[in-house]
Length: 454
Image (tube, rainbow, N blue to C red; front, side, top):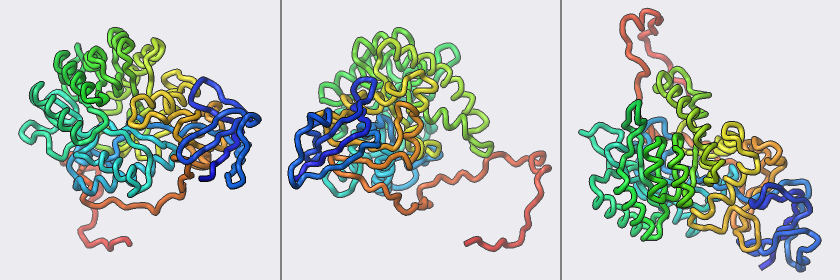
C-alpha cells in the first residue's frame, strides 16, 4: 500500500507546549510511521504520495470528551428523553457525529445517551456502515431520586427511553453496571447530583460515599471507565474519593476533592460552553430566561475559581463541549470550549490544545489518538492559522483546510440542511400566563384565516 508523506509548515504533536517547523509525517494506512524533522525522514517510494503543507499548521484531530449524540439539539428535558423513537435517535446521532467530525473532532466521548443509541452509532461507524469519528460511549446514566435524569415528577418516574436509569439500591446499581458492561458500553456514567440541595450544603450528592465507591469498584472490575455528573461540592468530593475517572463539571469542587482527585488520577471536564452560551445568548422568550442565566452566572463564578485551583494543583483538565442542546449545536460551537478555557480558566492556548488532544486519550476506547507520533492513529487537522497564537481560529470553518481520520482525508462538504421531524419536538405552547393585565398591552390579531406561507 502506498504511504503518504505530509510536509508541515508548523507541527503541534499534542505533546509539550510548542510547535515545530520543518517537520514531516509519514502515514502508513491508518497509522503514523514517522514524525520528525523533514531532513531525517525516510525517502518516499515511487508510488508514495507526497503532500506539501508547508504553509499550514498541522495538529492532532481534536477530542471532545463530553458530547451527547442522542440528544438531537434538545430544547427541553422532554426532547432529551421522550420525543423521537430510539431508532430515529440512532440515525440522527450518526448525522450529529459527522457534524462534529467536519468541525475537527475526530474522537468523541458520549457520557450519557438514551437506550443504546450511541453504542449503536459507534458500532455502525466502526464496521464501516457509515462514516464518522471514533466514539467512546456510556449508556444511560445511573441516577437516584436526588440525581440528574430523575427530574420528572415521581408519579411519572424515569421513562424507559430516558438518558438516565433510576436505580433504587446498591444491588440495583451493581446489576445495572453488569448489564451495561455486557451490552458493550465503554463507560459507566453516574449522576452524582443535579436536582436537590439547599443554600448551606449546595447540591446534595445523589449517592452516599459507600454507594458510589461500590459502583466505581464494580465498573473498574469489569474494565469500564467511570464518569460522573457532579456540579456541587458534595458529589464531586464523594466521586473523587471513590476514584472515578472523570468528573464532569466539578464547578464547586473543594480542596479535599482536589486532593482526592490527585490521589486517584481523576480528571475534570469543566464543560462550561452551555453556561456561557446561555448567559450570553438566551432570549426573553426562552422559557428559562427568567431564572436560569443568573444561576449559571453563579456557577460560572464558582467554576472559574475551583477549576483554576484544580488545574494549578495538577488535576488533568479535559476538553468537553456538552454538545447536543439547542444552545450547543453539534459542530457549531464545540471549539468555543477551548476559547473559554483560555479566557475564563486561565489556560494558555497550548494547555487548551492539550486538553483537546493528548489529555483525554487515556480515557478512550482507542487510546492511540490525540498525539502525532510514530504508532499513533493518523487523525489530524490541517489549518490555515495557528491556534497557539489565536485559539479562536478553530471555530472558523474556513480555517480548517483538511481533516484526516485513519489516514484518509474527510469530505468537508456540508450536507444538505435537515429539517426537524415533528416527532422530535416537545409542544411548548406558551411562554407566559395570559392574564387580563398581560393582554391589556397586546393588540388582538384578526380572527380571519391567514394565508399559509410557502
